[in-house]
Image 1 (cartoon, helix red, strand yellow):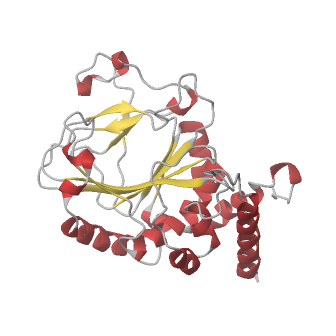
Image 2 (cartoon, rainbow, N blue to C red; image 1 turned 90 degrees about the horizontal axis):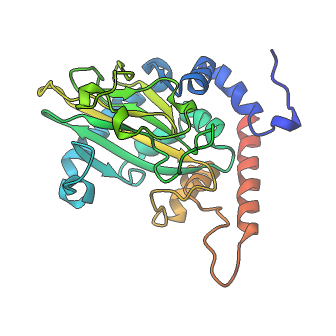
Length: 300
């Protein structure tokens, strides 16, 4: 059917039309029904984006000191491998990847017009690696969680993801269960007692894997020591969720360079965080006007 400019669904009308134009309408439905979706490289990483992300990611891993990241040396971490956080200032291609229309369409449909960038992280595993327990990303929301997700995780695969190199494990439909998994529900492949209800994500480098914040996921053990296993995760959250990363270090010049959508995502127009001066709603209104003007200009 034709999607009109219906006032009762004003926040989603244009994003759904955009999903149709981008050829990801079925992916939007898969996210709703199954809690995850896979977008093939041709749609996920057009115009050489996948190759540029690969080059930038390997340069990042070579340049950054793993010891600077606390989680990399945290003995009780549930996740094997290496992490690099706070990617936006590390290479322009990481901003390009976030502002990719495919990513932004999924993010806005999931978190709304005022949704924020929650976190950016590179996950890298080399050699052998242990599995990661099933969990969901709504870590501080007590059960029962709402039927909709507070967050969406949208990840670019920098390498092929196979069972042997420790691909992601997803439990389809778990986004509708509104609770995190309990210890007894961990699958047998992790040493638990539960039947293996998870499935492996098998996808090529350059693909996007997106899943709801309620969706149970983890990682299979990495048994192929020769193959790298790397992905870049962009998490977005609804406006009432406090972002995991602090973007106070993003300069105004960077926001001006990338435009008002970028500025909104990193909190430049956020009215929260006041002290004695109280909330600054004028800042939010300024941002909304700037975004509307930019969209009108792009539509000309």
